[in-house]
Image (tube, rainbow, N blue to C red; front, side, top):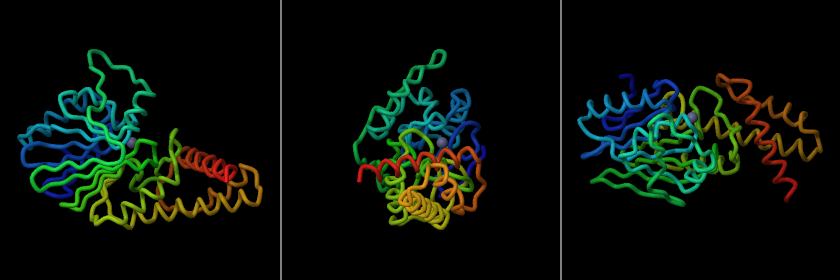
Length: 263
Ligand SMILES: [Zn+2]
């Protein structure tokens, strides 16, 4: 199996087809999985192999947000405790995803408003709701190994998509600042390779710069297309899908325009 060893007890699987990154925390008596993956048939097989490697069962699944590449395979984990923010539970209910074939639709069984701490012997995992990429987005921080899972609030080595419904660039900026304030050596993004703080700092700097440009151009009473053209010029040097960038900038423009009108 293809994985990246963040630490002896933390493995990230970045190449399961149609799935976002999957992370296993190996605790003394069980495994915790971060995000449930995309395609059910693949995840069934994957789960078997992972549980064989560790000779332990996955007992808890923590979700970073509701998008299907992170939650579509929840039916594979119905026997586990599924943990997510209350906002994520609402997001899932709203999309009202249909079950496939014989699978049972699984929803989180443990939900929290702001944060939740999981402790097993000496290992701690802090789950905290921030919003950003989606209104229900949360991060998972393990101080023991100085690791953080940030879900799709960051894609490493590609342009992070910010055009989803419920994306909020203000909460997003605060979330990124919070990650950077923590003692962290390894950042596990929702997509792309495990990285460190410099990559995340670059992304934060980009969002702040785009915000400044958008607010400046709105103040000059420029029309939407002209504001977007200026925002498009802000440099963020990673492989970029034009659609992803365009829909992100439109979403952020709409957010700051609305904020500007109401202030
Ligand atoms: Zn994703």
